[in-house]
Amino acid sequence: MLVFTGVHNRAPHQKGTIMNILSPRLVRSAAALMAGAAIVLSFAGCASSADDAAGTSGGKAVSSDAEFSAARDAYDLKLAECMRGKGLDVKDPEPGKGIQESGEEFNAAASICMKELGDPPVYESPLSDAEVLTMHLAWANCFRERGFDVVDPQLGQVFVIPENATDEDIAACTDPAL
Image (cartoon, rainbow, N blue to C red):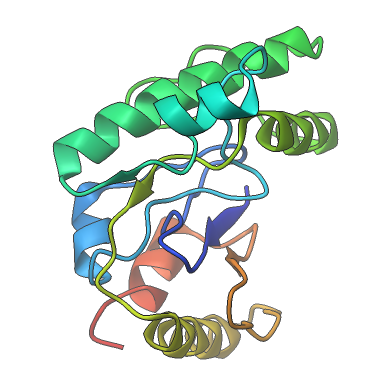
């Protein structure tokens, strides 16, 4: 299960393999971080053109929890459709949970679909890139203290939460009080 959080108003983090299990509380808690998603994992409908994806979900900024959740759920459905089009058995994700299937073939298809579909909807973040990097550095240190091997966060790149991190690890290390 990969979890990503990026800068430039991208998704906060996602745990659960291909898509995210973002809670609006976590997004707000992390100073309205950036709406969640990752290499995995953010796509919008395989058959859509880049213009269509950008206009309907890819990269569209939203500023309320309800608006973000609805846009992200729609995006996750398009991603699942795209992955099925690549020959994978992917169920339609439940609202707020994202795609649950995992494995190398799922990640590979997700990566292809993301390129085809564009970025997922994003949550408007009040954080600057420097603030996001500072936050990601704190997260990385916390995960390292818990025994995880974490790459140093870089400005403008997504933060990858360790695959085997538990919900408890994630909650502790992404706590806004860090």
